[in-house]
Length: 140
Image (spheres, rainbow, N blue to C red):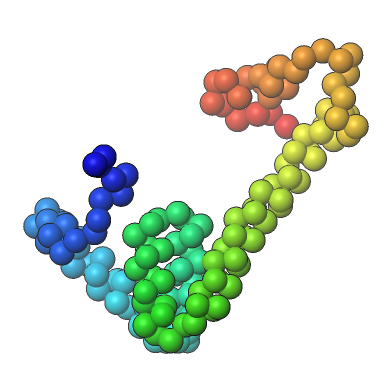
């Protein structure tokens, strides 16, 4: 059988983590307990937020763990899936909102209809002062 892309999270992995970085592990675990304790938000709501964020960050360990914890804190399957769809909309919404940048670039080119002046192929580096190929920031 092929090695899995994501090895299983085991008690042994946790112990190894603690051996390699005991202070950081303890600090992270304390931080996590504090963050997920009931406060202005109840524990179920915090776990539903974690399920949604886990889907956006695409962490399979977080998805599995926080889905189990959300259910344990009283979240229904319907609530968990609704949180996942909120995450999906927010992820897609980011791409949709960032279309403003593409529209702005088209406006600056005078290319609202999508056509390039003169019908020539487009050289991205020529429009951004070389930023696309040199890593520099494009002049405005």
